[in-house]
Length: 347
Image 1 (cartoon, rainbow, N blue to C red):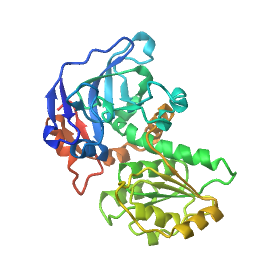
Image 2 (cartoon, helix red, strand yellow):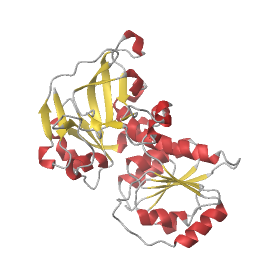
Image 3 (tube, helix red, strand yellow):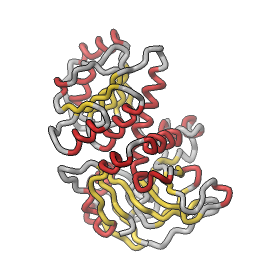
């Protein structure tokens, strides 16, 4: 079979490799890879050395956003041949902490988890892959290839779950939401916000093109300038990692607001903020800021449900470029019109 393989931090070693077809271990599913989604993490692995190779290996299969079709399934697995599935990214610590022991490996307390296509495990960027049934999610057959959006949707499903859990501290229910960033994560966050019946506003730098149209077609409101946003949001889902923007938005939220951070800023960057004023506002307004990364099975299931309820034509417009496996490295270079880029593992 063919696979997209990398050596972290050595972009010249990013290539299409011929690998032996995998053999499913007892109890595992054997899956035909259909599509993988591309995100910034993949480029960071290939170009900047993020991630770690599987032990004893000189390369690894890339990509953690998956979609495949089941080829073989044990009778007791709960899956059937032909099912469309996605594989979960993270695996719990082999000496589990309390969160990992309770199925919340997204909250791993000691950091010894592994991740498909990122940390010590092969990813899903191959024409065949195997997965344990407990780390696979069956999708609504009507979703078809749009199921490749499940993993990024799981990230924001977790963010909204954090909103619900923190929001349970008061009977007040949110009415307005601001999503910062109109990339795939931001647009999927906005989708879930509109499905919840909120007045959703999306902030991004671009002034025209596909992103504003996608936001408007959700029934949300698009802005390219924070000063244009006419509401003090009850909920903020931050998807840019732009640290200056994070603190500027924090000064403009409603009382009892909840901000969930999903974007990374880059640890070396330093900014100046009015720390005392922000501290006072957070204390006096009962504001909460929480970081959120990854997702567990419940979030994948929530994501699959949100995608199944969405307009498939709208979801299809999120996928702005399809790259064949034969030239997969082209997908690591973004173009101005990209929203979500996927790689077709069959080509």
